[in-house]
Amino acid sequence: MPEKSDKNGRLNVIASLRKLISEGVYAPGERLKELHVAERLQVSRMPVRLAFRTLEQEGLLQKTGTRGYVVRQFSEEDVLCAVEVRGALEGLAARRLAEQGVTEEVGAQLRDCLSRGEALLEKGYLAKADIEVWATLNQEFHRAIVGATGSRVIHDAIARNDHLPFASADSIVIDDAALDREYGKLRMAHAQHQLVFQALSRGEGARAEMLMREHAYIGLRYGTLFGLGGVGQAPNAT
Image 1 (cartoon, rainbow, N blue to C red):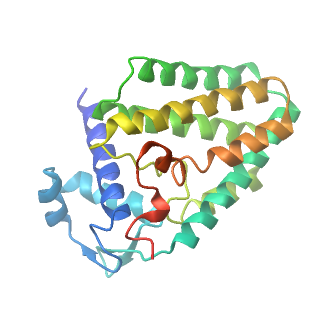
Image 2 (image 1 turned 90 degrees about the horizontal axis):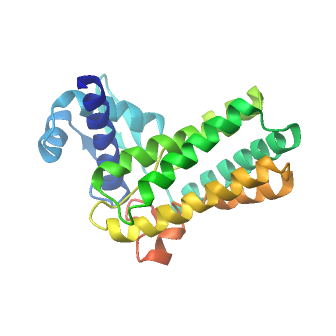
């Protein structure tokens, strides 16, 4: 239990910091200090330190000096292009997987993600704890598709693209102050997961590719449909 609690604490800090950066609370070029962030989020310094490393990998922070980090400056065009690239790469992975056929093992992995997503959403609302549950199953769903292709080229290209701001499937931004509206967005994302799995299972390569390309925009453009800000409209995107 302590290990799971520690992991959830770290993921909560990552999500909180990601949101603060996307909203421009921490401005481009601003140096982040472990102690100040820890006090703001009311956590110890260790999960903050680990969160800094994760957000550096995601391209939101840049290392400066020996232990310091600053907020990376990025434009709306940077975010849009990175998301488009991810959609293209994951779409390619989905098409190749549909054409080569989904194995029983991969099918079971994807169905498990869908079942967990349905269990999370069936109650009709989101709780704060649900954010990390969704982040984990979403990550597993995307990685299962990419990994199942067996293509190191696609995997490495996505890994490189993941270092750009908000480009990775893990870089989910959910406003915990607007969970009622975020519920609608995640319900749509879950429906897209279901459609992708349907296309993969039926060997519909072109459809699977199109769906994954569109799915990449769920965090960037879909928020406005539910009265939420999109990442591309964040104050930090200049």
